[in-house]
Figure 1 (cartoon, rainbow, N blue to C red):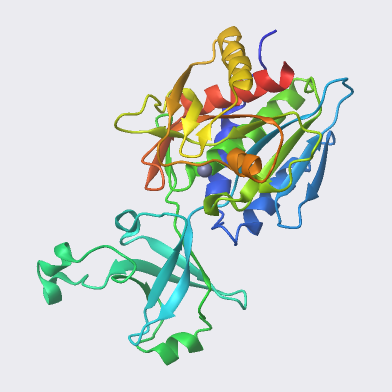
Figure 2 (figure 1 turned 90 degrees about the horizontal axis):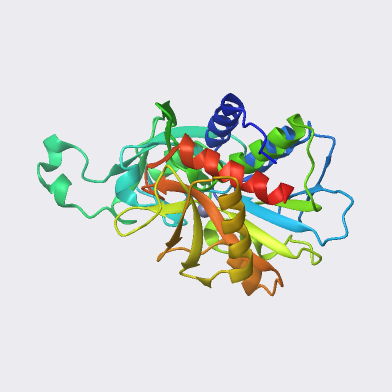
Length: 348
Ligand SMILES: [Zn+2]
């Protein structure tokens, strides 16, 4: 049986919209709500939320076999206001491991607790070349020296507080999405690309009049970047969990942007051999281009579920993402391979 055709325009349109919704961990509700609204067009799906705010989507079918699950996360790296400096600028506390040099000069939004948003940008505190000369090059890019300059009239802590900004307010970095020549360049393709893989797999199957072979839960996670996203919300009758998350591209890695990857081992340990075998066989049968790889600085939401006591066979697949947790890039070939792999798994 051949796999349904993926609607490329739909995929890109959905992904670009999702990338442009700010959703740092802890503030991911707008992205969860967007995915929920998108999936509400499919009558086949039942949706619920966990108390933690994750979206759980069930596609129930008649089958003797136990249900399976897939998980991907919409939360991203970001920051909160840590301190308002005496010059009115903001010191930040990072959410997840965003690399400071990658967001230097980037546009930001500060979301205040009153529901307003204030524009700004990230700078080193020795930014002016005419003031600091070469010192600007040598200042370490770290929590102490990076600051947010607000696009509002303030030169003091008091004036900044009067704008409505408080300690703990969410700070989101512009994703800067660009689609060129099959490449998608943006922050936070980790893991919004894989949420788009899941959504477009569902749409492609529905459009083709197909249903999964077993009942399936799609868990859209909202706390992955801090390590515990899918530790709750996977029903106990689920037999297999496929985590769909980015593959690591760079020096020493086998993964690239033009293939999907099956991760055998990462920083959190080794995945389930039996489920890996099944995924390899499916890729072979459907001519899905994939690599196998090992990630060093990486832990997945599936492992969070394992560590929380989840009793499932667990695997990790995903598209190659270059410069992850920095200014990321993916290619449609790797993205399509991942969507196809998801469909092959669901239909098997
Ligand atoms: Zn991720």
